[in-house]
Image (cartoon, rainbow, N blue to C red; front, side):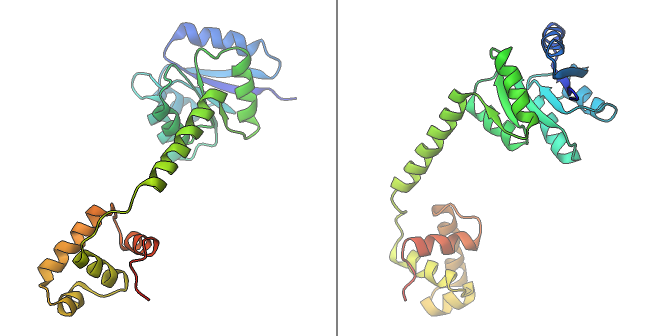
Length: 216
């Protein structure tokens, strides 16, 4: 069976040497190249064939996160496993959102590294059990907090403007219907967008339906 070709990207030469020794001692891995920065990794991807990029986040010239952005932007077809010292949840989320297939801390070398590489090679995503649990716990915590949060208080006039906006009336139409100036209606609309944390009309419609502001 063909060996999985690994590209190492880490600015610490000693660590790269250790990783190369570990990986080349396995029957199904071979180190195909080494890079000391994100920029070098991108250059190597133009010239060598590799199955998995083992990527550090903290590197000179170009960080691992920026390297992930560029890989995604350029459409390189390579799977990436982040190997870093950073344990912060935000780094994990951002790396995965940018296309990383897995995230592993540098204190999880040897057996778990091999397990993660094999999982990524099979098209799976890999997180340590404690990291996956932490992300899930915080996801459900955020969902519960949103569900428990009471609706924003709106004045009678704000509710009237909201209902007419989501029913498709223009600002000039609403000004005539409510006997308000166009400027006043515009101010109400802006206030509603800010209060309800909306950036587009569809979000106003969703809020109005959810909180029964549309009179049948």
